[in-house]
Length: 448
Image 1: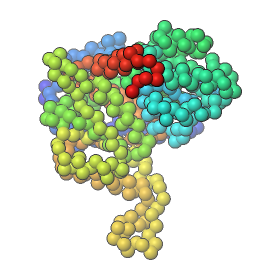
Image 2: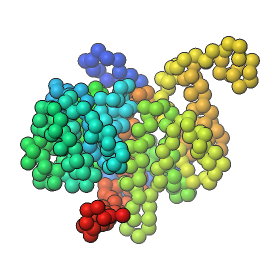
Image 3: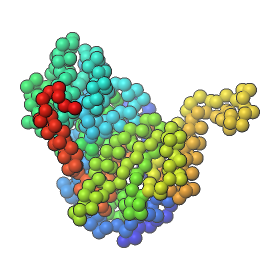
Image 4: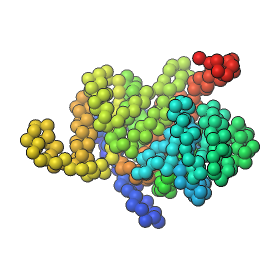
């Protein structure tokens, strides 16, 4: 089946009625594909068959789609967020990978004051020092591990327990909660022994779990409009289940990305313009890499490599490579159009005659930011670099929900095109086993 390849602008409605006095941006998610779709491969029959099955049979859908419309996850997240807020004004999340990246993205993108929630992922001893030095009287701890056996999360929690116990506070059962799918795991047993509440982790892989309690609970604590977020995801899910490529933005883009990879463009650059959009690329990096980097049934190594970049900073570090380097990249740009009107006005003054100052005089810093975004985009297009752009404002939960769902579906469909399973990570497990063997074969204090 041949896919039409006109230049396309897709506008997705994102209006949501909410009983809330705060201003929430409900402008639509805007996707412009430029020259992106002209690289699409014909749609494999098995993808259309899978989409048709998922459309008529919700129980056969991938687990992340079964989270939609999300009533259970919404209610659970709002309940625990309110319970935490009754005694705490700060939430510390212990977790790594999918247990942290999704929640961090929601908090950083959708709130202006992200300091209410701290995410500790790494176990670098220098970074953990600040964790142990916190004030704990009004701090809630949330330890997240789907398996309940994640060594990094266990190490964080176990080293933190004596610190919390010796400081003034309401006691461990009130200060610490656990999220895990397996109450009989190590994390579950610790929780049971200490009488800590266990919040059930949805039966979905960590990197696809952002729209479950894993991501929604920290976001709800920070004040994110969770119903609006899920409403956006639901709208996009309805579109992305269509077996007609013309009606399914995720399918169209997945076919294009697969075609570009076949041409040697197997590096997926996500370039974000807007500091609050940067964690979208960080979350996507795990989703894309861990889902697609696999060995297919023929024994061939597959995958597209995600590259995370920031505008305008990386115009001064990576753009030269993008423009004149190897033609092995495809580009997704993220831009927050509300930034254009922000920032101080650059005064003309006595320096306006300077050639470098003249174009800036009288314009806001946001205008310069937007001009640099447009200039970079146009330079890439002038080099015939395959490029698409998403425009969404921060503080727009509906649009972000749509984007999350589309990227999750694109990942799943590209995996289908490549012939790999997107929901496991066997090579990661190999590394974990080897790390454990190192610990088991050495005495404490002797590892080097």
